[in-house]
Amino acid sequence: MNEVDKSLLSKISGLEAVPPGAYNLRVNGSSAGRADSENVSIRPKDDGTGLDIHVRPGTRDKLHIPVIVSQAGLVDVVQNDFFIGEGADVSIVAGCGIHNDSHAQMRHDGLHIFHIDRNARVFYEEKHYGEGLGSGENVLNPVTDIFMEAGAYMEMETVQIEGVDSTRRITRAVLGEGATLIVREKLMTHDSQTAETAFEVDLNGDDSSANVISRSVAKDRSSQIFLSRINGNSRCMGHSECDAIIMDNASVKAIPEITANHGEASLIHEAAIGKIAGEQLIKLMTLGLSQEEAESQIVNGFLK
Image 1 (cartoon, rainbow, N blue to C red):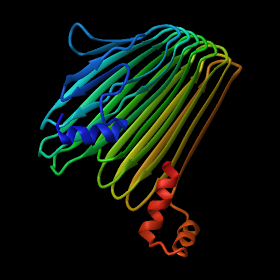
Image 2 (image 1 turned 135 degrees about the horizontal axis):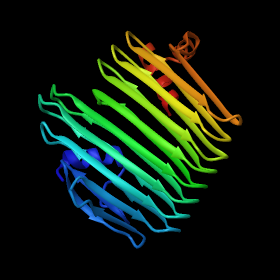
Image 3 (image 1 turned 45 degrees about the vertical axis):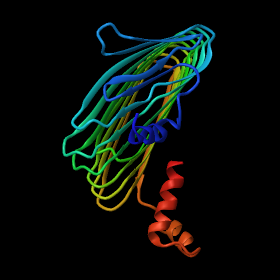
Image 4 (image 1 turned 90 degrees about the vertical axis):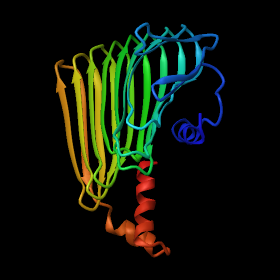
């Protein structure tokens, strides 16, 4: 990797060197390094479209699968399948960074499919970031499909704060009996950037639960669309929350949808869009901050 790639890697994954344990580093459409651990195997698919990642039952481990795109005009498409064994407890650090100094669009379309066995636990972290001096667009389109068996637990944190001109973020999940899914999204757009987020969760098993939380900030002329659909098909609990700050001439649309197909489905949705409260700005400005500095402090705290 060159210095640009190393800097991107640090921003999206916190890595400064090759991590211990299992990892795969994808740079400009190809693997730039890969390793297994005792209980985690990472294998390229036969057709070259991505990876099959197998975690043995009962494993306690952490793995890294970051992606870097820095080749002008590259459209990178990948599918990774995760097979998490029964009773495993794993942390997965993913994410994609794009560096674009060209006039051409650069894009990464990533499909991650999780097959989570009974009573397994997964913490999944995904960061997206763009940079560069070129006029070409940085485009990221992540898709996550999640299939959870009885008693499985997944916590998913996604962050996109800077440099992505266009994104369409799709997460779909099917939960079995007693399964739990928690999703936390943090998103900021500026200039004329566009972002669309879509969640769809099917609560099929009794005592399954889902909590989907999105916090976003839209600045300048940017636009955002948030769609959350939770289907209660059993005795279950579901909660969807969209909380957005709108600034300048931006636009935000929130479309929360809940459907109860069972008499004991308990579903709640919340959506709030508003500007920064004037009293918050005044309070910080009386402490010596400029209006711009005060707004920055409020936004940073909101997305923390």
